[in-house]
Amino acid sequence: MPNDDHQMRISHVQAASYKIAPIDSAIVTMMTDPLGTTLSLTMTRLDGLPSVEIVHGTVKSDEKGLVVQGAAKSTFEGTLRKVQEFTAVLRPDRAFEIAQVIINNLAQLPLEERERYQLPNFQSAPSNEGQDTDDQ
Image (cartoon, one colour):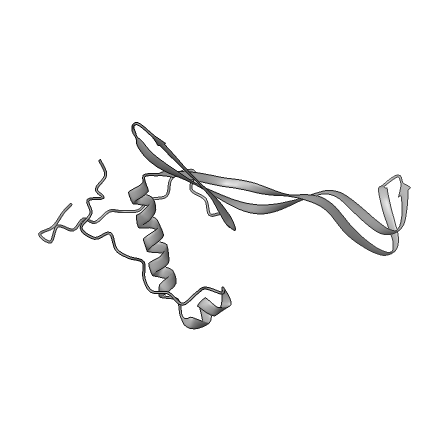
């Protein structure tokens, strides 16, 4: 409920399908049609899927299955693939707001952390203050 300062408290709840996923890249696409513009942000991660195990050592088969004798080492062959974790569809103004929040938070990282992730030394993102971004 709004108070006298025109502020609103909104509780956060997790959706039944909520999950945390490691993300290492994103794909951004934009589409414009007569109804407006949307931005799709697909979050992805690189995943390795082993398809073959190569066992080094003496391998014999008996009634229990495969038995490896000697110093057994395994190496794996597989394929790398990009796994799409989820896609968020955003209006351009919401995408801009999210980008601002991310940049503003990164700008507050201590210098050691910026150096650790090879981030440039930058200031906060420009504000879109004064623009109407209320949901319609």
